[in-house]
Length: 302
Image (cartoon, rainbow, N blue to C red; front, side, top):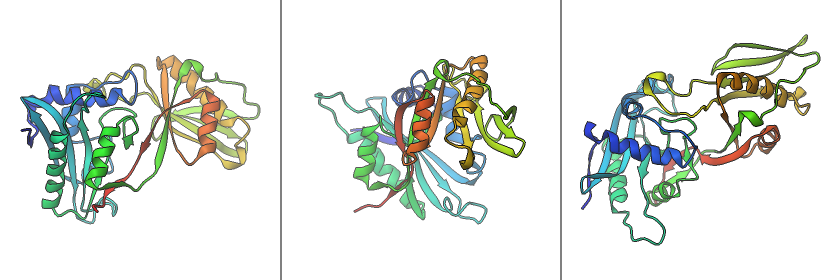
């Protein structure tokens, strides 16, 4: 019989292997270190708004014959007024991981089913206002519930979690395939520090017409994540009056030149699936769809 128990420090290598198996199915060439995984169980400094709201964290594993076959990380948010209304007194399964059996092979879902029951019981004991679930791993690009994890999706659905949020398209481009910085008549592009990275702002005499931000520090250095030259399009915006004139493509060209000089060879971007126009503009600029991910899942048992 599998045993469900709290995470122990000597589980760290097996847990990291389980995390990296799920990361690898979403984004190629990315993995995280043991230190990254352990740190994320304690706090998430990059989530500077919501992380201070967490009142309790719990990590559980399912062990079978001395092997960690499933794992989950839970958060319980405080109920005081400092916490945002959406998170206040909420409990969530931040991520739930397990390795499914290969097709046509006998396998059992006993261990993940037991672990899921333990997660729900843990949240019930804490009398949280709402129970949510996601798949946000401490790795670039892996958030929501990615489509390459149908085994996790099926387990969530059987447990009563329903998709209540949006679906996003995750796109990826090689920086070599992105346009270069083209002449921009009547427009000056300046490079400054941005909210989410390095910002390239396009200006005319009349004011700002758009900007793009790139993040080249997806992995905190002390955590030693392997990103394989991965950067990020953190923000991309062009004023509505200036869209449809290749402005986004030209802004991306300036960002791409910068990323190539930084040694970044791949760059993801993210758009809502229902914003087909923006998705198509990114495709035209050299991006292709990597996967889709569903954000927002709440527990609504039948």
